[in-house]
Length: 84
Image (cartoon, rainbow, N blue to C red; front, top):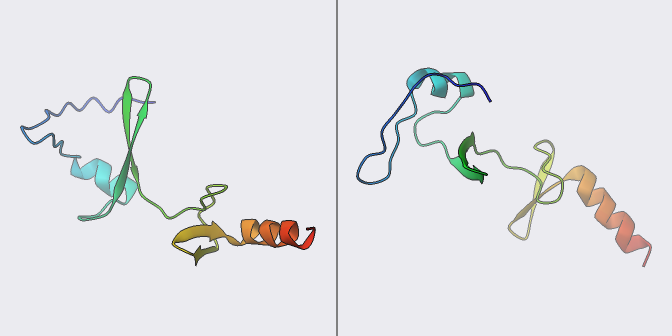
């Protein structure tokens, strides 16, 4: 992980401003959802993208009962069901 050399303070509501240069670089626009992760002692922000609940793929997605699944995993599920 590379340091950008930018330091921001957390305000009284727990907010931190992401610098415009970083938002532009990552394609994060106003009101875009971001995911927050903890990795050891680090906090990670990531632009939210829909992804398959099984494999994490972000391409060729379908909605099924409020879950997002990629076409490859759908085919694998069909294959498993056909072997029963």
